[in-house]
Length: 235
Image 1 (cartoon, rainbow, N blue to C red):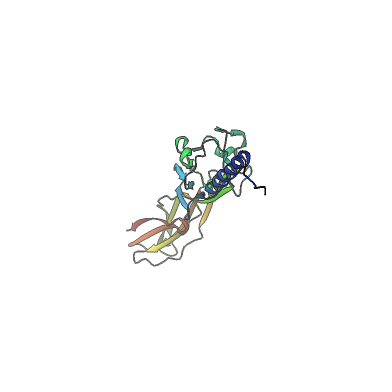
Image 2 (cartoon, rainbow, N blue to C red; image 1 turned 120 degrees about the vertical axis):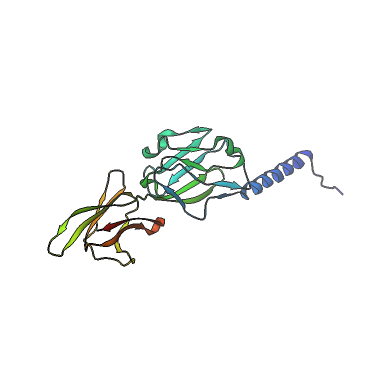
């Protein structure tokens, strides 16, 4: 009776298959981790959009991509064979994005974004094509500035004074309110809003008030949890 025997070639093949399966299994366990909460930045800040592999995998030699979901071209940073592909990058991000070179071997592909602009706001995706792993990070951009109150005239009919409140350098568009010393909202003229070439907003409004009053101008943006106010005493 002939007995089947496993030859050296078959043994070698079996070992290679096992090693390959183990490699695929271990690689498949790594997940890209971004941020479950939005990253909040002020205009002009240098920030980090977090993204790393867990468990860590050396990605120094892999293609790494960062892109936006609502811009064209969509890429903000692409690394291939250790070199940045500058020509694929959206023009507004040139010179403002980079990775941590020494951290890539530890699976860290967080994006450094410098001099944040209002237009940078949105969702970003970090992606490792070889691992087919992606993760989203949301960036919220804000800017706030204190208002300035000035006396612009006298209202002879009402026997009061006309005040103007103006605040420059907000993002997103804020709300302007006039209040008395007790915090009650005053009836005022419409708020004028101007958006500048830098995407920042300027808001202004006028109100007529009686003399001998303390008046507050408050400018607020609830999305970024920012409030600025200035108080004036009308003698």
